[in-house]
Amino acid sequence: MKKICLIAVLLGVLCSVNVLAGVTAGRMLYDDRDVQLWVTAGSISELSGHVQETTRTYYEVTGRFEDQADRENYSFEDFGMDGGYPTVGFAFENAGKYFTFHFAASFFQPDVSSVAVRNYYIGVDSISYNGVEYEYMRIPEGQAFTVDMFSGIFEIRGMYTPCTFSAGDSFHFTPYLNFGMFMLANNYDIDAGPATGVVKYLDPPEDFVENGQAEGSLIGGLPELGVGVEIRMGKPEKMNIVLRADYAGFQFSGDTGAFTSSDHREKDIDLDHVNVRISGQLEFPVWGDRCLTVGADWVNIETEAKVTSKEATVEEALARHERFDKDVEFSLTAVTARVGLTF
Image (cartoon, rainbow, N blue to C red; front, side, top):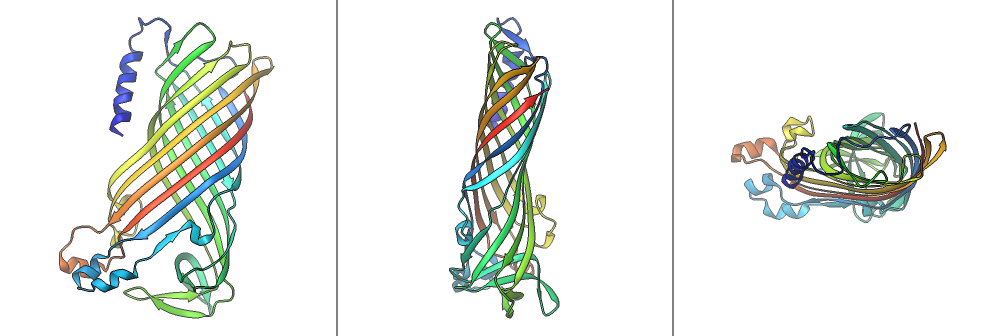
């Protein structure tokens, strides 16, 4: 993140030197090409993630070191998820001389069918047994189950373009600062057959419905700050080739209170998030200065986090009864084609 800030400062200094030949303030704008609307289709070629439980402070302060072996490791592979999911969506962009707004949404359905390779203990929004609603379910080892999901990826970005470097009227190089928000939303239904009872798990114990049908949703988002460049080749009235490369990220060290309202389970967190995007498109004039656009994007997102217990006295650790510390990793790679119009 410090490197991004340094690049931003150098960019501002360089763009302020207006005596440089071929440097103009802001980005180059062509008539009827400042607003773009696309429909998109593609594939999530790689999707991986895992949560590895590490140590539990409660067991350390109570001398129950052997119980540390109860830690679990959950991954997308446990649910038969590894990628290859088709996506559809749309995107919108409004370019100004100094500021550009970009919004993109992509949707996919990673429905899976698998068999539990060990006992799965899962927190859900709702699962019912004998008319009573619970928040946890257990899928026992060897039980077949299905998961029907509907997921969405949303990106909101602003791009500040201080200047453009030009070579004649057919080559423009525009650096910019990139800031915005990455969001992932998921709605799911789990079907593990008829519910067969309620079992106790965890310390202190919680009620887990064995098998059954559960539903829930997950929504997460991270701010992003980065840099990018756009290269435009072509005359205003002709076909243009537009290439972009973006690097954005987010680093955070603090407590989980910034991400959850569960104050009684706040922990320390070290988070590192990186979003890299490379895109290109062709713009074909079709109605006056309006253009038909055809392009593609490659995106790679990597997120890592360490969630650890806060420093506490023995009395505080006993009172909190905290869960295991965790190492979390998430990775997504997608390729998307797009077709659109400029206005």
